[in-house]
Image (cartoon, rainbow, N blue to C red):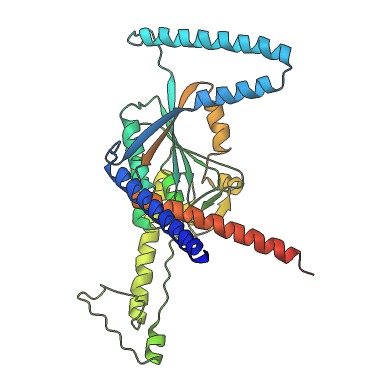
Length: 354
């Protein structure tokens, strides 16, 4: 009897594994056969005026009693009816010369890393904006980046220059940090705003790498580096670096720094470039004194004030992720959750120790 029980338990486990396996195979097959919505990604445009109005309405009603709430809800309904009627009237007369066009503020976001990988999304968003924006509109870029590779951030800054070449005003808002390559992007703008404690500057160039040559020699390991061209390789990870190579490497850094300084000074003519191009960073209030920014305020404050006189449209380009990327993100999220739970459990146990 015990044998039959064990056999049944084993069979149940085997059947469960088979069902899970078939489910995973079916899921993968369905995802692979699912038609793509677009070749690369999807463009999303959200009217932030509507979001702000909805939030305002919810809060306004929340502080009223039931009787007041009914009266106010009726007023809001009547208001929305009038707004829809006005919108239809504007749409009907949009070709009339007497019909004024309301200003539009296009809101983009850039969250930078060392490779400035968000430039893939930024270039698509700017291309989309350029199809409709005019010189009477504005682009606001909410920028957060501590910098990274020169060529990557150079490309990101060049994308913003596309707007300037079409005479479209560009404003950059920094709530946390725009340093090094991040500030290279920011200085393209006609107008820069920053939160009072945002970090700006770091107009400098840095490079570092370890060298394992002595470790290799200690373990009697030979390393050969063959090049054609005197300065094809200046400093290496495993070879023996020379003073001549170091000098050439530093000269290249200095040349890049001079290009960076020239780029900033051409776009922020009022700054004393030798004073700010020391590699230092400054908080918003000091950055304002040095001319690195034009005003101190958060992006939220700027956007809400813009809604009074313009249609504020958030433009986002969302890249489609492959099955492997989606599974990787899910696995990463699961691991993060497990680590957090483990850390919380460890912390709680340590607090209970005598």
